[in-house]
Length: 215
Picture 1 (cartoon, rainbow, N blue to C red):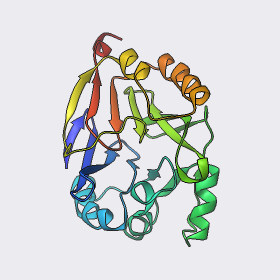
Picture 2: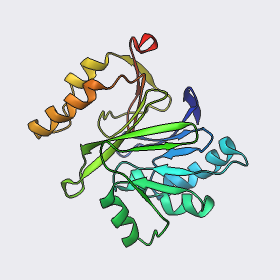
Picture 3: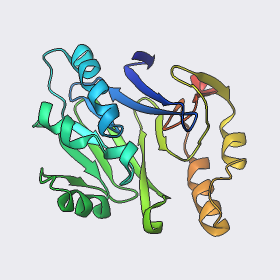
Picture 4: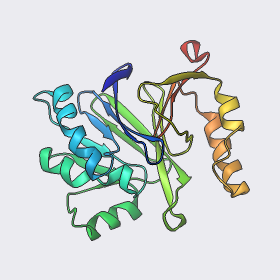
C-alpha cells in the first residue's frame, strides 16, 4: 500500500505463477472511490489495507472496468465490509453481478457519461475487453488528470509502486493490445484528446506523463 499520486493509493498483489502484478486503487476524496477489487483472495488482503487508509470513513463507490475475476472477483467481500458502497460498471457487468448474487444497486454507465461525486469526476470511455468480446469501461478522473486504463497498457513483472515517465502520444501510438485495427484506431483517436497527468494501470508500471505539469 502506498500513496502513488496526489490522493491516490495503490494496493498490489503479485502472482509468481504468471509473473503478474494486480493493482487496485483508492481515490481518497470526500466520497472515497475504489477502482477494482482484485480477485477473492486479493480482496482478503486488501480489506485491512483499506481500513487502515479509510479509518472510520465509509467507502462510497467501487468502479470496475469489466467483468473478470481480478477486476471484480472480490466485490462480495468488499460489500460485506462496506455495505453502503455502490458498484459502478457497464450495463453488461451489472447483469452479470445479479447472476452471481450481488444484488446491491449498481450505478450503470455508458461511454461518454460521467459520475460526479464528492471530490472527483469520472468520465467513461469504452474499450474492447476479453469476455465474449464485450466492451469494458475506462475511467478518466478529470480534476486530477488520472486515467484508470484497466488492462489497456499491460506489462508483466513485479511492479508495485513502479512509475515510469512517458510521452502520452508515443504511448497511444504504440498501443498494440487490440487486434481489431478499426477499433484500435477509434480508441487511439479518443485517447489523443485526453491530457492525462497520470495513468493508473491494472498490471505493470504506472505512467507519469511528461509535460503534464504544464498542461
